[in-house]
Length: 195
Length: 226
Image 1 (cartoon, each protein chain N blue to C red):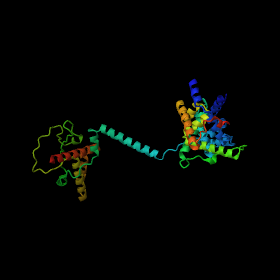
Image 2 (image 1 turned 90 degrees about the vertical axis):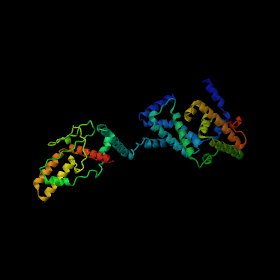
Image 3 (image 1 turned 120 degrees about the horizontal axis):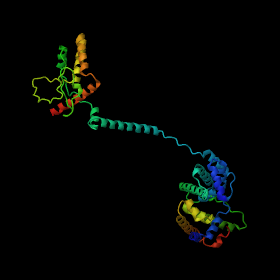
Image 4 (image 1 turned 180 degrees about the vertical axis):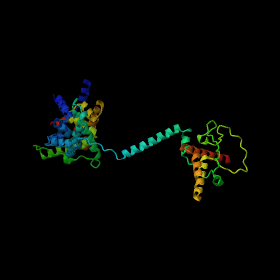
């Protein structure tokens, strides 16, 4: 039902209906933005890249296909644009912690809150240590729980390539976290109990 | 299909998923941003049309150069095909004749001026090759041109002055004589000299052919001199 709705909107947009294209933007902009933001850790740059992605989609509207969904094309473009931005960041090799917002108000003690903050910073820093494609693979597979086929389409590789990239990225992330804090944050299941 | 799902299941790690979700709790990326769609649409509608690529400034110049070069090459090819001797003939056509190879006899104008009623001397028939017919410029009236005859073995002309009886040279000499006669007021002689000069070389083709022959003759004389 959703796929056919998207196909109908894409068909109308390809015939010049701007409102149909706007509906497609509304449908996918959140996910495109989130993808860029998680890769860049910068909301302003993510906003720009999100807009640029849809601009490119509009310019290549005639070649877009809604089978299975244009979101794969959009995420692939957003991913490539994000990688280009990351490559230009030669002067900022570390994670920008300014972009990480404060923890929500909880009943946890200040010490617990500080520890949680510290762990979050560590994980984010370790994620930044991964290559952009590895980061994309980890975030899409573990955080968004996307299938390997979709990751392969976004990364522009085969299924086996996506699988090996996910596997390698997970191990590398684990090693980095171990090196940072000396304990394994990933393996214990009780650490991430709250989704 | 089942194997693929098994592979995915092998890779799944609930602990890592939970950790990442915990890290991105209250992630602003997950919150709906008001006005984002409008910003995107504003950008799309203002810059969505792909700009037309402007033609390069050098494109017409390059096209002009290429056209001229092509035309020149084609012309050279046509000339080479049409000219006897191919490219060598074409190049020889453009090669300037060596200067001061054939020195005109200084006595000739005076001789012609003194005897305006004298007929035009018979030119020498020149063959381009042994099999070729002599040029039409040599077949003039009142001249016994030995065109098709085999040239007789020439005796060494010791006491004879070297008089180059070439139509072009004769025409130029006659013209000079006419001019000299006109300068001294002898209009009748001048007229006759002018007339004879024109009749010697009546057409532009003949003029060109005589020039060519003169050039060959000069070359031969150079070759014979060693």
